[in-house]
Amino acid sequence: MESKGKCYRCRHMDRYYTQEEKQFCKTQFGWCRKRQETIRIQENCEDFSCKPVRKNKVNGFLAYYLDGLLTQISHIRAILEEKDEEEKNDES
View 1 (tube, helix red, strand yellow):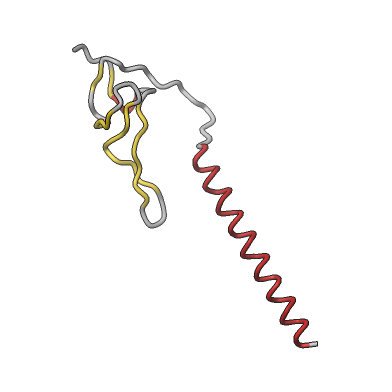
View 2 (cartoon, one colour):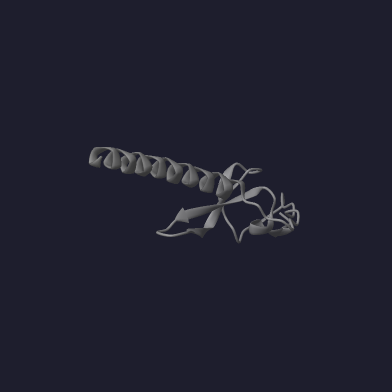
């Protein structure tokens, strides 16, 4: 088997991350969509295909996650404002 490149640079590999207390951390493993198995990121593979260079990295998952957090914060704010109005009405 002729190796062409490391798996961490391959377009077919999706790295696994672990959720820590305040951030996500990279692991040494990932999912190879071509071989359909979990692999180490330092492996070499004959199916290697270099990832395209992206100048503007916008992580879709991060945007989705932040959107969810903003929605939750908006709901909490609405609840707190309702509670404030109720307390003002009770006082008067």
